[in-house]
Image (cartoon, rainbow, N blue to C red):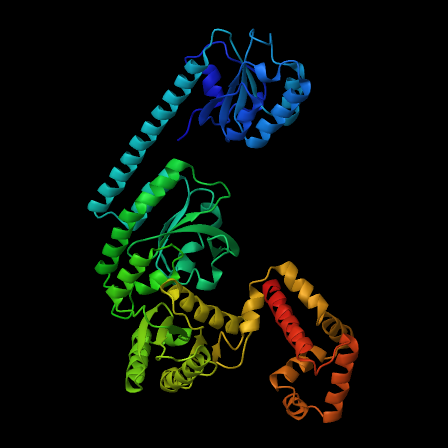
Length: 549
């Protein structure tokens, strides 16, 4: 742990007679380097937490420069300015002291006999001693962790050793974020110690859609979202570190990163001991797909070779979501699903790669030579229909129970294997969120909606306001259904008769509604460009409502 602070420099170091003039409330500031400034140009090379030494030659008799220097050093995040007195100044210049007091920036006075080289030697000797101490402490932690592993201690005990070193609550989870083990620090114990075990019992603390944009994952514990930072385990799964808003220091980060290797071995051993060894279908290839850890092209080729994935072919991914009730009724539901699909695709001469984990089966269809992307997507939709034909009987007639299929886009490059996977997941998640009636949907079918989902809320709100907001507000005030009428008009390919039939309306009523829509929007519903703008507005409205809910 870094312990070289201004307070240590003044009160505990071998250097004598250093006086703190301003910023006494900031003596806990860290010092990580030393620099000498006798020319203001040196400011360009200053860094945060640096102790700046000077005789004051570069700002003597120049109050404007003195004040600007304090502001610049504060902005750069320097630790302090140390001025050697009785050289050009008998004391720190009053205008600098005043400005530093205002900004909360420390100014130190060094005695005349104190050499700058002596200050540097003391600081860097302390930094090296701290680094050596940190390495020794890290070694002790890893020895304790390794010792606990070889003594066959529990996963919880191993987590406790790591938690004591990093000072955070820790969770161990598999690649689908099912909880394996945990240890909680006092900040979380009162809130969730009574709830985490019951929640863990159903093995679904976390769903893939809850991955956050800042590379954290969120668990809902006692109704409260608690964020964790994931570190990937080599054996599959994650070590999750509680995000407190304060980053781990360098030593804590190093211990957490190195402990992953031991924890990975422990998880693998526990998996074998419990008989939960992955079959040919439940393999770690999904862990690679889910992970956001970067891998080189050579690493990806090696992984593909290990699992038999043909990375040289253009491919499209179909995500198959297995119904939860079926998984509860049949422990072999995933394996049965995979075997049925694999047999079906073999009978239809479909080149494919299958992998599965948790409640998902992922089918990578390899595209035929020269097959265009749109044709490949159309073929994938047909294949999904065939799969549903053999899988739906597994639901055994249970009402509201069905397999769902999300079809991604075509990808060819080695680096986009994961993207093909995520396309299919985003489509199935979007279909779930939008409560679509059909259980087979493709990314290409909802391309405008996916494109709009990449915009920020401000832009979505602007698009909504520029297009369908006036219809939405009219509906709310008057109890009308103009938005749904417009949506049905799109879905029925702008055929008035089909739209009226879909909405159970008389054709005159539909004509009145379409005229009202034209009047409120001041748009031509026969203009393809304006129609596309309106469709994008409907997408923006749906996404805004989705995020609000």
